[in-house]
Length: 478
Image 1 (tube, rainbow, N blue to C red):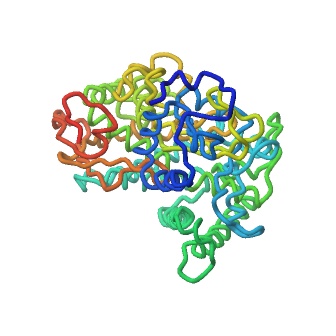
Image 2: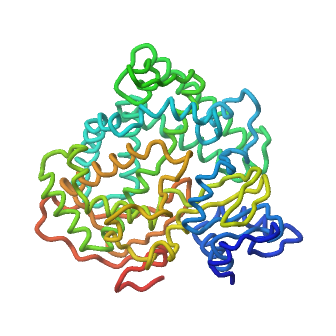
């Protein structure tokens, strides 16, 4: 087993810690394991070979960067580029090529141009204006929870976030419109993520590849109509902000219709906020002193009135809990970069073209940066974030929607604690899996408590992979 210090020694050759692979079988297996079970595979790679390793060890085609500070260095290094859809065959001029030509596939000057054009719409000042919309949708969804008594927690949060996101980003203010577009995005994502789409790129009837392109055509048509309506009439949503002429002093250029459609697809097909909300509530349930601390802070700072962006920023306990939840169970299991000329990771040179795998899930468990890394310890967030902490990515390709995501999480969590606090049903099985975002592998049922309930049920037992991933005092691992 390689020691962590191995990654800090600059070698004389292009060899990294890792296995030989003369028949390329391990490389084929790596792709399979990354798709099937990265939450077991990547920690095992880290334990065996250290924070930086290669496959094969000599002139690797795949490089694993799984240490906290090593990952941060790669994410901020211009020698590593993004190309999130490289594995898909997309003919020039096809709808899928158009939809995937946004920030997730751009580098260099074009990436900077798009990001600059979008910066104003996603600034903290601008996203704060959407608090009222987020709260209205949240209250409409939460109103139905007490009557249900027990809810599918992730399913309900995903529905809530979908409606809020569609309203704030695209101005789709009705449940039917939001669910229709979201359903289209979900089906398109499933077709694009199907293993056969990359392995069998043939437009034969019944193939996932053909289904992907057909759904992309539908999505382009819907998004083009939304952009056209925003140009004609405008609105208060983020897309309307992007199509309007820049305000005095902004100095921003505007994107064309095709560019707006690509960026609309990028920002509308994400479910990371629902993921983060779910895992925060699950971890609070498993750590009841923090559950009560958040509940008391909400009552002390906000009381029973609707929260505002200013008030939620005055809640340090809530902030600490969200940070620690996103450290242990970050929205994205892993991301990929591609090495260019002069790329290096942890002091090791990386050959051009090598696929570089970075995992915040593994890096956030780096004991060199996060002592006692498998425990939920919100108190560790009393100062500046650690240098290896990147739930929203890091560097030029960090999530541009970070401010909106954090505001939405804080508003929704506050409102849940005010109106209908939840605890997990005893015997729940919680299995985190990677499906674009980190989500539960099966429905997890939660009990809805009455607002201001005097008694909160004691935490019941839970089973599943969560008990292996997070060390909870008094609970046995499964």
